[in-house]
Length: 149
Ligand code: CO
View (cartoon, helix red, strand yellow):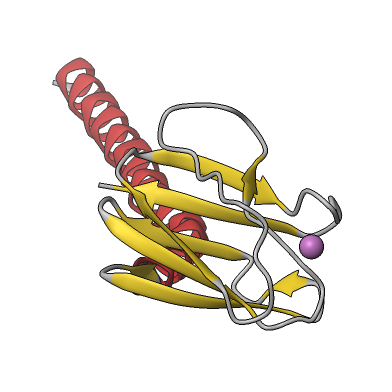
């Protein structure tokens, strides 16, 4: 009987020990996801900020006809994003002649003649891509039109 009792007590001790081990392991596991969640909250917040920024930039996609002055030796909307099919109309407001000349010769890139004061050049962007341009007499005058679907 004492042997049996000893075995039973031994088993109970083992069960209690096992239960304690399981309890602590489970607690660690329960804490682990919480730690992960906390760690994930920061990236999630950043992602939300990024998507907000994307939403803001999406509202800046221009369409139809975009009028742009060339004034004081600069393109007044030097970096725009337009929907495919958008026409950009540059009007020179300076006494000096300016033009709109593509940086890179490729399909869909604008190329205008020299404009005197009050003259305009219109170009319809039908090709998706980035189109950098400059003024031939003043290469430091730079602009870019990004065309999206
Ligand atoms: Co110029």
